[in-house]
Length: 123
Image (cartoon, rainbow, N blue to C red):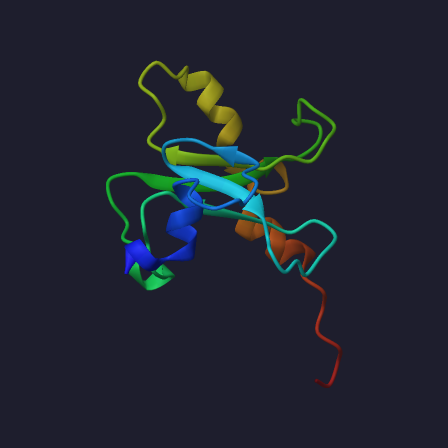
């Protein structure tokens, strides 16, 4: 299946798709049929058919944002980690990526839950 997969062809640069980012693990490119003003796809280079094919290995993943006053750049940016942290990573520096609730680092899922619109009463 991977040989005929369009995304595998894009990941191998075998199409005319403009890559916004590429490394040995992932590529990013504009969606061919965007649903928003900016709509991008990030895919693994290795063929993974669906989320059902994902397996938690030794590595873990963490996605999140720094909350004021702990953000160092005033431009929204998502931190994406494939854990564990590198061995030379300073343990104190690691502390700035620990979720502390309403301050410090907030995991992406928790932020999405926090900003989720309230359900109308009676629905």
